Image (cartoon, rainbow, N blue to C red; front, side, top):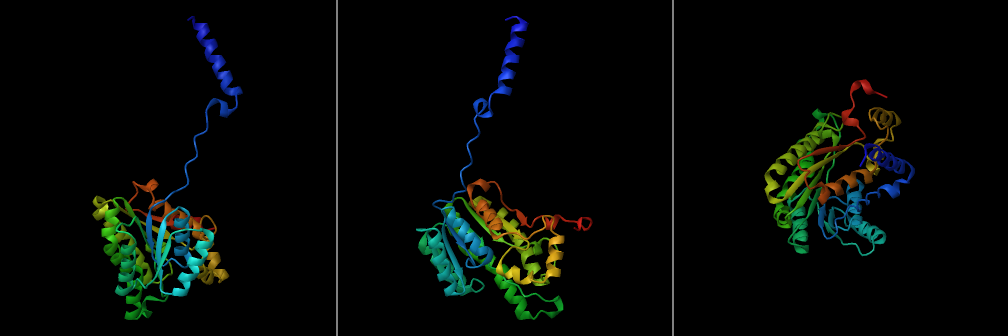
Length: 291
């Protein structure tokens, strides 16, 4: 073919690309399917309030069967009523249990084992705080925070490991805090339990990868929960929080729950051992970036 003919053909092709609508030139990629955990089973500790409730709701919306616990039977009944109303036919089980205690952990383990010999997802969400200066902590208070925030996570992960391993591909998501990443006024004991959770996350990731168990940690900053709203009633303090947060707002429960659900599923199949802050940029903000 003469050179000018090749040039003419190329010019015509380019003109067609410019004139034709994009849909007629190249079809749009098919949208990604909604995150799905259909057929999976999850245990979520502390699932009746705040972030835990949001995680239960998010997992149910993805088709996951969920078993959760709380110290208060009335809160569990309310959760069941609300979730079944929003997701008719959803698979939600509840257990009255305080997982800060051996008896509570045993009750949750028994319930999970009775439902299935396999477990796909464990969300260690339970946590509490006693906010005071370091010199003011009594030994019993320190022990209570260790039991609820850290040892419940460790011992439940140990107890449920056989079920997680049996699933072949499973995920543990620990709910930590930015207090375990940087230094804020949450109190020393709370902060050290959350920092230890970060290290536990990495260690379990390395130990249990061969068993098909991924382990990650999600670390929220202030999230729009009833507990946080009580703290942020102090307008002066709220302004300080927002000034130190590049995005200039607190987070929403759904923003944390969505990350938990992502880490629980197959889309995160090569993500393990990570500590991910959900904080609007707070932990990356240096002193020169005050609003």
